[in-house]
Length: 188
Image 1: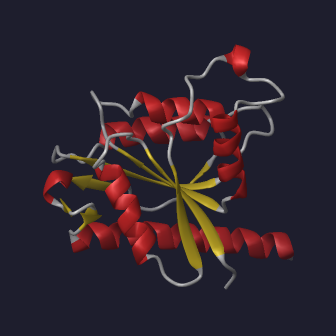
Image 2: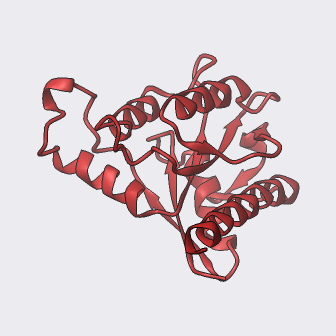
């Protein structure tokens, strides 16, 4: 088994974000052979095609480089008004460029949604998945990971609900299997 580098992106900038807490917990729980690093979206400017040049802004370059260097992505989104947060959509817009060679093209991704609502942010996740399909990312198959009533499942900045954690870890395991299978096909 080769070492797998995953990049985690939280769709919330809030201090004490449930999305960030989930990613921090996943980072600590990943098995040997895989590593999850986190990338904040706090410095990414609003997308403006006039600024999307051959010399991208430093925060945009950092985001694109982090995605390019990762073997796969783990994106956790809250749900705001039945959709994904603007900060996450904005980051995906930047990472979908330049057209034809964008870092999201072909990138294996697993998505997780979390919400205080019992539905767990399924609408935001559907919107996120639709956007990722438009960027030609490779969505990991399997059950959709949604964490409902997340406010009751986070304590001290960590996801403490074992069934939710195991569900998310299972999805990441599937993502890792997919990445390894792709690597084997490339090597053959």
